[in-house]
Image 1 (cartoon, helix red, strand yellow):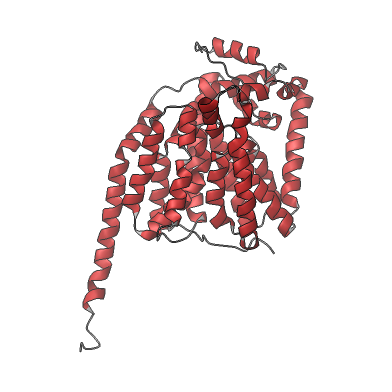
Image 2 (tube, rainbow, N blue to C red):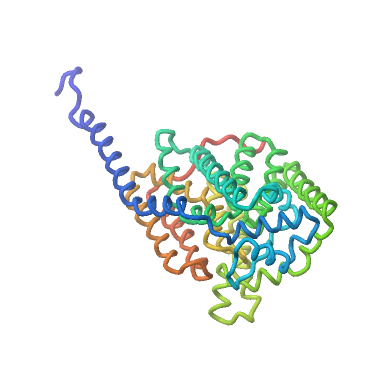
Length: 398
């Protein structure tokens, strides 16, 4: 029997071995990610394309000059003046309360505004990724994983490169859930206005927020969101009555484009079947009804948000693969779980492999449908031994 001053053999070597395994896992994770780091760097160094940001900038310029920001012909005229030669035509489809967000950039010269938008997007995504890492209970010393996720998540890279508005929505999601955690319900309701820049992407999350607010009698959340959306819309209409053009033609422009899982169904079974565009959304609503019924009595946002957000994006009637940038909280929640389980290399292989597979389809309805694999990855990790997300919870209902 060892004396009281003897250190047991196992405990003497356990800490160095654990430390070595942690460093090895980090090294393998970073090694697997190198091609994606290079891809991200090349995107940042390459010239910014016209595409999506051009549409936002044109809509903002039309809004500020008193023209119809939802006019296809007026938007195309500005696009041509900026050098757009492709036959494909774009028009902004975001609702009227989004105009105050795009108008400030339209006051700047186009190329200056484009790089300002890129800089803002990068800053918001970095801050929000680090914030959500802590939100889901990730250790401070492992925050590099959150940065690595952002640096290798190609939907986020594409959203920045195209000048999409989704990084701002990601920031709104971050603000909402931190405000909710700290019981700042008016501030949380204000963040819902940013959700509304593309409400179809987060429709199930909005349903859950409404039901949660009703259940816990947090009326300030939906009331603040609705009031601000109404004020922003009425203010936009008062400034430019042509904003009413949103209600004429934007729906047709949206459904003419094959995207999302619904668009993939239309490609398979006939584009003339418009109802197929909404089949995934109908399935999403049915799933959400079951999900809320099962968990509403013990609803904890840190546990329910990741899957809810992925299903909401994946079943929305209109989305592109780069819209998954809004789903970064879900990916970060998975990263926290995997980091706790010491399975970083194997999970990284799956994470990067899904992106490679999706990338094989290009930017079309097939890549959007393939993005449903993120839901599969989430469910797969839940059936492993990865520790569940708990975060640093603060009771949300007084």
